Length: 80
Image 1: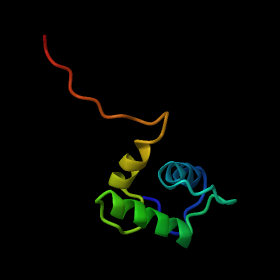
Image 2 (image 1 turned 45 degrees about the horizontal axis):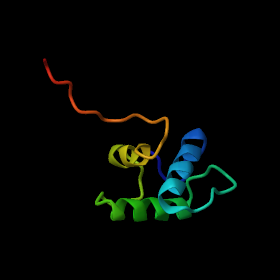
Image 3 (image 1 turned 30 degrees about the horizontal axis):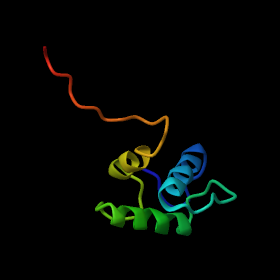
């Protein structure tokens, strides 16, 4: 999970996905700081997730739903 003081490409991706939800411009540095934690908590709260400010599995799935190249769930194939 991503949390305070995380950095690097995963945090850049996080900032891009958060922007998809809240429209806030990208910060200059790819750092998971207190402002990022607050944005994550607000997102979690709005979507009925545990608002802990940590990007765990459920929050990652939510964020990935706005990633144009991200994974998608699809219904199971029906047998003929």
